[in-house]
Length: 94
Image 1 (tube, helix red, strand yellow):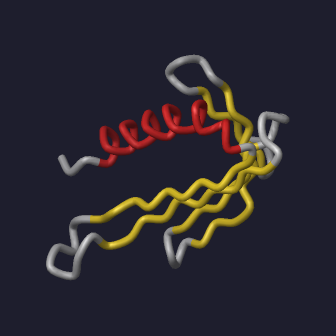
Image 2 (cartoon, one colour):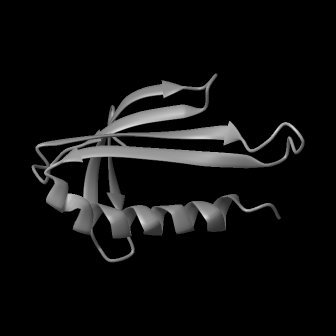
């Protein structure tokens, strides 16, 4: 990471430039944009939230991604799925 920009390399070799827009430690929320000319617009948030009040050891990750053009879904969806799988592997209760 350099200043507020980081480069993420996915398993398929795709490299994405992300600019961190905001980090809210209190609400465990991260907001970022994707650069590099692949999108007209791309903004995303990632937030960790309690899964339920009955199980304080469990959490839910909510990842929202808004982008244009819509056709980029063919690129975004598999990368997001891979990111979710990595989160599951790395954050699973041990």
